[in-house]
Image (cartoon, rainbow, N blue to C red; front, side, top):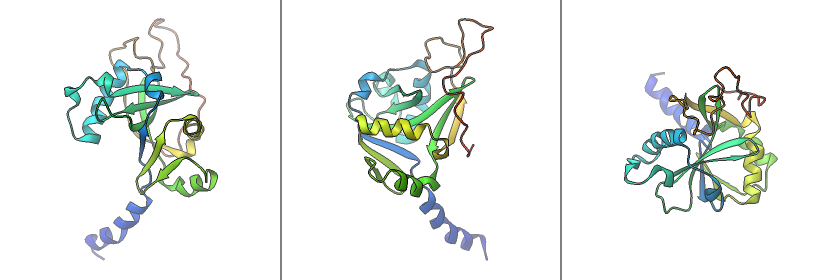
Amino acid sequence: MSTRSLWRTFLPLCVLVALSACILVDDFGSVWKQATPDPCLNKIAESLYYAEFNRDPSAESIDALARGWSVDGQHFLLLKKHADDKGGRLYHFDVVHGIWGRYRLVPTMRTTFEHDYPDAPVSLSRDTVTLKTLDKTSIQLLAEIAQKPEYWEYEDKILYNSLRNPACRFDDRNFKQPNATATPSNLNRKKPAHD
């Protein structure tokens, strides 16, 4: 069998398995106001903006496009395409020993999710999860799923705070006491099975 035949056979299977790499939110609601800009997260958000929207974000203030938000010790980056949009993309992340890690949902967990959360306020398509709004029910769902490592795998990792800026609020390192050992809020969390 030729390489081309193999690709034709297996590519559709790969596409079917590729669930929910992206979480979309139609309306961030009051969470957008609760979330705050972060100087280190902004640099990462600019890179994601280029990649996701194929556009240069410099026409608008990145503070108007990207915010960091935490719920039950779990961190999320909210990213809008335009400042006046109600919703946008939602990325689950952590920072461990100064390394920012972006998670994606594990594609093979779709059936488990549908079984465990049959009434979840989400719309699942081939490669996205869409939430209508970040209301109390969807926030509770996000917080619960975010704490289950079997649902997540790392998408990418990058140094979070290369300038050691104390204003970067998600850093788990303590820059005020140089010899102090930081204790990340999510250090007790199990690492994803799929690194």
